[in-house]
Image (cartoon, rainbow, N blue to C red; front, side):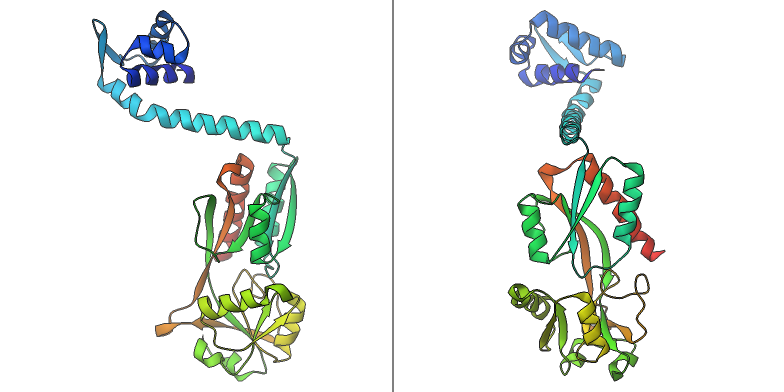
Length: 302
C-alpha cells in the first residue's frame, strides 16, 4: 500500500467521482482507476463497489476512509520533521533551564541522550522564568525546562514531567527547622529569600505572594550560593522542591534543614514542572530528549 494510493482513494471518495478525483490529482481517469485497483489488490479487499458510473464504499472502504487521513497527516509530519533535522544536520539542540535548578537528572538526561545521538550537540542556557520564556518565543532555544508560571498555550508543546512538593529551607539554628511541616502563617516573621536579578525582583515577589501565598517580606540573592549562605546565617528562609536548591538527591548541607510546606487542611503544597517547546519546531530530537529527561526525573521517585 502506497501513501499516494491512499491520497487518490481519499480524493475519489471526497469527490464522489473518479473523473473529478483525477482532475484534482492532475492525472488521467484511467490512471487513478488503476491506482485504486492496485490499492485493493495490495490489501486483498474490495474498497469500492462499482455501480455503473457511481460507487458505494464497502465496510472495508469506510474503515480505510475514516483512518487514512490521519495516516497521511502523520506521514506528512514525519517527512517534515525528517527534512528539518536533515537540513539542520542534527547539529545542535539548545535547552534552557532555571538558574535555581540544581538537580542532576538534567545532567543525566544530557549524558544518556548524547550516548544515543553523539552527533547532536547539547547547548545549555541558564535563565529566569521570564528570560527563558523570551528565549523560547524568539526561537533562541529549542526547549525550556521550567515550572509552570503561565497558563498553558496551544502554541507550545507542554510536556508535564513532574509534580513536586514544596519545602521550606531553614537554618538548623532556627526553631522552625524542627517542625515536621510548616504552614504559610508560620513564616510571617522571617524574610523569604528569592533568587532574582534586580529588574525581575518585583515579578518574582508577586509570584510568591499571589500564587504561593507567602505573606513575609522578601529579600534577594544574586546566586544560589549566596542564598544558601543567607539561609545558613538565619537571615531568612527559602522555598524550594526536589528539583531546586536542596534535597537528598543533589546537595547535602548539614547546616540547612528542609521542612515540607503545607496549605489549608495540612495538604502539601506542590508545583508542576514542564518541558516546553514550540509546536511548529517539534522534531524527533526534541521528542527524544523530552522522553529521556522524563525517564531520568522519574528515577527520583524510585
